[in-house]
Amino acid sequence: MIWVIGAVAVWLGAWALNVWLARGPATRARALLVPALFGLSLLVLWEGIVRGLGVPSVILPAPSAIFERIIVSLPILWGDFVQTFLKGALSGYVLGVAAGIAVALIADASDFLRRGVMPVGNFMAALPIIGIAPIMVMWFGFDWESKAAVVVVMVFFPILVNTVGGLAATDRMQRDLMRTYAAGYLPTLLKLRLPAAMPFIFNGLKIATTLALIGAIVAEFFGSPVRGMGFRISTEVGRLALDMVWAEIVVAALAGSAFYGAIALIETRVTFWHPSQRRG
Image (cartoon, rainbow, N blue to C red; front, side, top):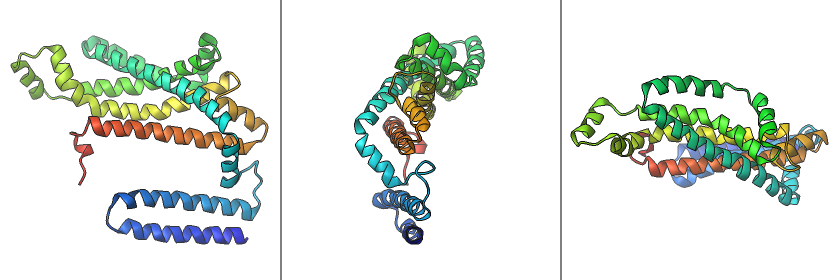
């Protein structure tokens, strides 16, 4: 029980330190230190409980065992990352975003198209991934192309809805002002409506980052070459190698968080004028 008592003591101490830091002046160092300390204390608590209570590794491996597995399996994890994230998720994300924005621009030009496209997009969003994934595998093969196709279907609707909503965000006075400058449809779109739609579009882009990774991983459960995060998770679960499963989960979580953070960083640069980006 010494492991459990020690881990709980460390967690309580870190909690008290976090409370003290949170009550202090808001600085960038404190903003980074508080979540880092909270996460590390949870890992210590996890390690102590697993070791102290003797939890079997097939139920819950300790963080140290997962870290060791990551270190010795770096070539495998890198190959799975390239197959699932760079080839499947990222390519599908780019294609899905491009298709969503293109269809939104076409629908924006016609009220008839907008009324017809939105229900179709809603229908595509409601398609269950476990139903369309095997169909895409049959259509596009077992390699990354079928996973990218699943990702396209998953990210298309959030981008479409947010872009259509963003294009409608400008008010009548702003559009009338553009008309007084003799601005046609294209100048009004490029200089007024698309910039105004950017906060909405980035909301869709951030939602789509997690959908893309989830879609690529789940699609690999229904057919994949002998590599990829989904393939590795499904096979290692069958072998009761839970440390490898957790290693893949850690890599997927880090990749998804970095992807979301990159899009959020681009958003702060593009929509710096929006009230949501103002500080203080």
